[in-house]
Each structure stands twice: as C-alpha cells, then as structure tokens.
Image (cartoon, rainbow, N blue to C red; front, side):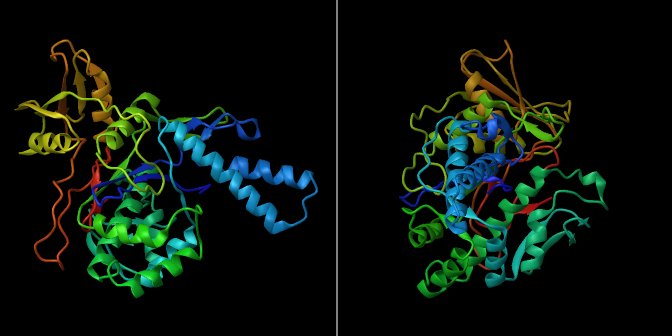
Amino acid sequence: MAKANQYAQAVPGDGGKATSICIPRDDYVDLDGCPDNQCKGKIKQAYGLPFDAKAKQLAAQGATNTAQREQQAREAGRKAEIDTVRQFLGGVTIDHFVEVALVAFFQIAQVVQPVTVCVNEDTQDSYSGTNFHKGQKQINAEQAVTFGRQRRDNVHPSLNFTDLDRERRQQAFIASLAYQLKQAGTFTERAKLQGNLTVAKQNTAVDANLDLLLLARQAFNLTSGNVTFVTLPIDHFGKDPIGEDVNIVNLAQVRATVSQLLGTSGNSGSTSTAATPAASSGPSATVDVMNATSRNGLAVQVQQLLAAQGYSKGHLSTDSHHLSRSTVYYGSNASTAANAIAGALGGLTSAADTDVPAGHVRVVIGADVSPPAPNHVSSTPSTPPPSTPDTANALSALSGGGIPCVK
C-alpha cells in the first residue's frame, strides 16, 4: 500500500450498486499525525512514513523480535493511511481494509489466465514491457502485470500517457477479471471460489472482522454492471517543496465528489475500504446540458449519467460552435453540486455564471469528455457489452459488467 493507489469501495450489503473510488497515489494531501514530522505529502506516503517511524522507534527501544517489529510497523502504517484517507475524503466511515501486494495480483492472474482486456489504440512501452495492438486481447499473468503498470508510451507519444492512465488500466483489469470470473461460474461454485481465495490470501492482508468469503459472494452481484469505477479529480500536476512531481487537488471538489458518489447511492452495508459518509447530504440541482461537439446524442448521455446520480433533468441543447474543453457553469445556490458534477465528469473546470438560473447547473460538453454508455448486460453471455473509450484529457466513470476498452 505504500506505493499503490488507494481505493475507497462502497460495497452494499443488500446486493445493490457499488462505487469504487480511486485516489491517485501522487495526490498531495495532509498526512494524519505528521509522521516523521512531515505534515504534507503524497497520499502513498501515508503508509510508508509511519511504518518507518514505528520501525525506528521499536529499534531504539531494543525490540529484537524481527517479525513482531515488522508487524507492529505495518499496523502503524495501515492505521495512519486509513486515517489519512478518511480525512481526505471528508470523514467517511471506513469499516474494513484490504491490502493487496503486487505479487498477489500476479498470483491471482496466474490462476485465472488468460484474461481478456481491450485497448483503444496500438501501444508500446519498453519501461513496463507493454506491447498491445488495438482491440481485445487475451493476456497471461506476466502481461497482466505490464498492462496494469503502463503509464507511458515511448513509441506513440501522442497518446500522452500519465499516471492516471495506469490507474484506469487497473480499474479496467478488475472489471474484466470480475466479468470473466462470473462467466466461469467462479462466484457460484464454492470450490472454485475457495480456491481463488486461498491464492489471494497468500499476499493479501485484511482486518480481523472482514469475511473474505462473504465479500466474494457479494461480488457476484457486482459483475453485471452494478459497479462503477471513478478516479477522483485532480486540479493540475505540480511540484512539492522538494521538487517531486505531485497531483495538486481541490479538496472541496474532492469531498463534494465523494459526497455525491456515496451520499446518493442509497446503499448501506459492508465496505471493503470506505462506507457512506457519517452525514449524508449530497448536493442537488437541475442540470442543463449543451453539446458543443460534433458527436450526436452526447448531451442525452451526460444527462442520463447525472440523472442516475440524483440530479434533476433540465434543458438539452446543441451549440454550432464546437469546443475543445468542457466547463460546468452554475447559478446561485448550486456551486456545491457543480463541483461534484465537475468531478464526476473527470475533473472539469467549474465557474459561476449569472446567466444560469438559481439552483441550476449548465454542463457545456467539449471534445475532452466522453461519458460512459448506460450500463447493460449483453444478451449473449459470451459477448462482452460494449464500452465507451476514455479520452486523453478526462477520466469518465467506468462501468463494470463487461470488457472496457481503455487507452
């Protein structure tokens, strides 16, 4: 967890829809407890710094049992990371945690290989070892690791990869893996399910109160499009005081996005990383959508996406002047909703506009946003449902229930 992204996943106990929220690992945040006297840093450091501080403390105290010292340091790191994530997300209740090592990812891929994935364009990266052709491809465990690690393309620089694309790759792999496991009957056959869990447990840590078998059985309900993967928005790329690359975030926008995603889900129950906020008060607004692109039907898609999140449907329109960038405008009493909508659509810019009626939000869609198609299940189980490609500049919500195509 010290080097990985954090995922806050609301898993409803009643079998309803789930939301998986990815926190990019380089988000620059307040670190709970200021470990090693460092009060701000990348969120991935929320584990490593307190782990290191606790290990040093135990060594100074003369602790000689290496295994116990390692375990106590890990517990310190996990607690600090959970507290940092809780604080960053605006006080969500975290019921359980799951810590997955890279070797566990590889071992699970070995058990279920080959896994079908899909990319929008030919892509190649000598650093991760990725070399994929456009379209769907069956990959083995070694290729699965490279697929999940890619964040650059040294052959096709115009694809403009970033670390956010690596996170989207990981989300797509999880969605594809879950779809394949369902097709194989893994979630309904106890022997298959127990065999996969036995492998997963070898390099996975969970809290004492989490029943992995029960969680895995619940996962069956999330393989038919009942899970949505969302990456929290960042404001821009920047540098920290010592010159390292970080993601600069708008904390108010992040928390408004989380409140909207979790607060309007209407679900309660077990949660692998984060549950519903203690005080649920998701923003509401009437949303007008203008399509400023050449793609027909885009305004309707965006309206349906936002209506599914609890917003009221407003006026739809098109603009003959096509725009490259999207913007969310809001009237009085609608700034919180606008920030949440901007985040849900991939971290768009939001701005006040006196021409927008009170309580309304106007979403002007440009070429930098491509919303996901409505969730559905293919009528033929062996044929994965189609999905909408990502764009280079925005990470829209990714729906489970099929084989999603990504950059």
